[in-house]
Image 1 (cartoon, rainbow, N blue to C red):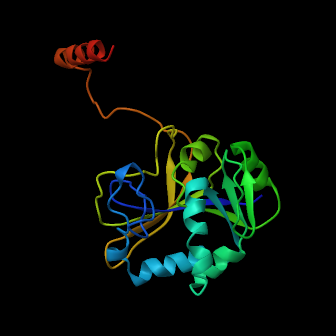
Image 2: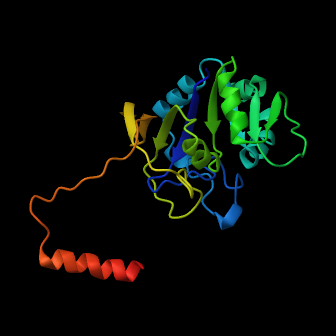
Length: 219
């Protein structure tokens, strides 16, 4: 079975929109495109090289596919561009507009991704594509998350864990911090969230009243 890795560039507040350039994705009025350029360092570049060192196929949402298809075929002098050009691109989309980029394939549902994972072939890597994560996590299809969190707060924009993201624990299996303060951490799903309490005594009358008050307000 293929392994599916989600690799995301994030701000401290979880935004992953348009790290590469000002006009990459201005949807919803996002004005901070290109935020990654000012905090790139060599160790981050080495992590990207490692991520794409072996055979891989890309899994993309339609918007990220359109961004990549308009950029990477014209930048094949970049080693990543050359690899993206030759890799198979699987695109989850309801649109039937043609996928013109070489080696591109349409997927119509999350079930199609599950079937793709069961087939033989290289591992799959998600780039961008924020809308995929809630659906894939809900279906337990992501095997690893490689989160590269940069020391910047953006305040608004598309986030990795958007609406519909299920609860769940993660186990950190690798981590490092680059010289500029980027935290590169790899996580694997690790079961359900367990809840509990640190309270050592029975709740006070004030605490019980607080709970009743908030329950009424939330009703």
